[in-house]
Length: 332
Image (cartoon, rainbow, N blue to C red; front, side, top):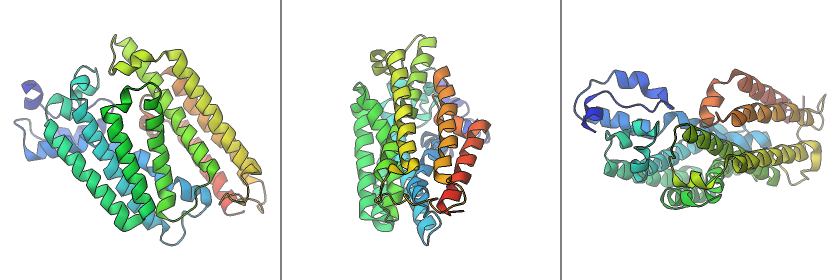
């Protein structure tokens, strides 16, 4: 362990965002600057892209640029960033022994010994309290309840739920769904049932694909990062992500084709436009799911944020969907 502390800050190869910053910090004993860098790395800055899901509900309802909405969404993004960082810190402290046996995670600051376990726990709890307080004071009571539910569920996941077959997939997927919900609740938007179904199964699609990739990775390295992976088979996880992807596409199609009903805030989007933009948005949406399925099928979907940030075809498909859906919202 001393060899890790006497060198440069160990950087998780799957999260190279802090490589350059770490290289600027002189090697030597543990210092406040090195601790701060280690805590920041443990908070997973590259994972913060997941919190952009807070804009999902306002985008679906066509209210993204309504008065005060951008500011409220920015606050919701920061709240969930604090909450998710708290979970990462507590999770790394709890999993320190398992991470030290992992071919990639052993480089994380807590596993390598750079960040003390107690400090990771303490920082995580402080960030959790800050997230709940900010949600209550700056967003809404409903948003604060969602943040509390997210934290309770994720902390339970860190301690016990991650060891329960299928429950672990559901909990992680629900974490994504709560991110999508909190944006609507923060700005006072009603949440469509079709929005919740699409977001929930879309999250399950990505989470099960991630687990499938982790299983193949650990099999190639001749080990396991968590005992629960032994209980899964690659064929079962493949079935789950294919099923979840199919339900995601089906629910989106049902919404886009007009079966959502009058209670759906976006039910009338695109009704008076030059073309049926809402229905046409099915094309890039399905292409996006199919493109992501390429990585799932290869077993390389272990880091969804890496795919979203680096895969140019997927980015172009996402831009096309945004353009078509924007035309639907503005009835052009």
